[in-house]
Figure 1 (cartoon, rainbow, N blue to C red):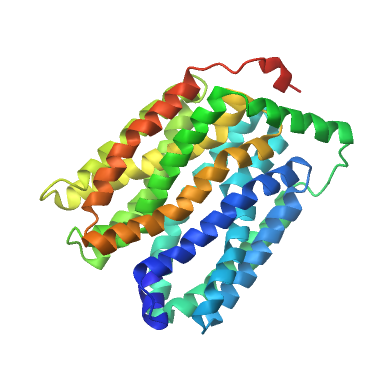
Figure 2: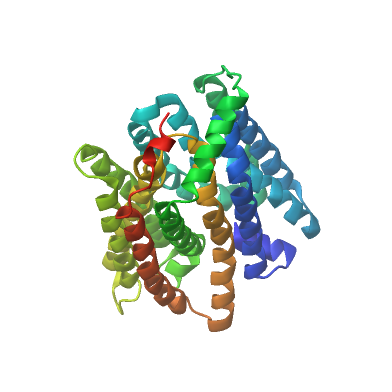
Length: 370
């Protein structure tokens, strides 16, 4: 929606992507309180409320005529993201299934992997026929009449009253986690990984267009990313009992620079871009499972929402800045090639951080057990 919005408001590309950055930053800052609320049994209220907020925000967005209203509106969109996407979903699943959470997280991500498969072509279809304002109205209706009822129906409606002792125990677990090198290694790896993925993904449509592809071919390549995510997650689900998350994580991180390198091949054409979509999508699909399973398997299963919220906070802020940074690099260079080289270089510290977490055992682990 960035090009037609930029034209309507007479804004630059970097200014439009700055709105996405603002929403991502707000989502990152809200991750900890949202996770803590879910730990305390308010998952149904949080996720249903997030769907309702998303509905209202999208409807308002579709009718905005003054550009100055967009920044406060995207603050609301950021809150809706924090209340409805993977992080709160993982926290609800973890609280519901306990030690079996990895299977639940894998199942959730399998379905989530179809999001781009469905909504990239659907959004393009709607944009071509209804414009960006009409498209937002349809997306608002989807949140209202599909997402909201599902959250109300499937999330446990019982809200237990936690004692002060239980809350204090969770606070103690959070303090314990902050003293673990594995936590900081995971934070560094996930922060850089999702900043890189966010920066590339938000610009993937024009980036692929820069390769000389037609609009139809670009949409085709983008549409392949969703099934590739699902295939990657199915593979992880099949080997879940035999492959520790540490080993899966290392292999996944190594796949990302290989995917980016394919975009730098001269004359690679559609076959190279299809292979890129498969590697890129599979890596992101598997990394989503790793992100969800790393906390209970490599740190602690307790206080999942709060710990995962802290872990994702800097990553969400960097994810917010990354699309704007990429837009600024493009504005200055007129090309996405510097972005791709920078992304390949960033994979080195990503791997280093994950290896630190993978081979550092948490101290006094018994303190984190129920």
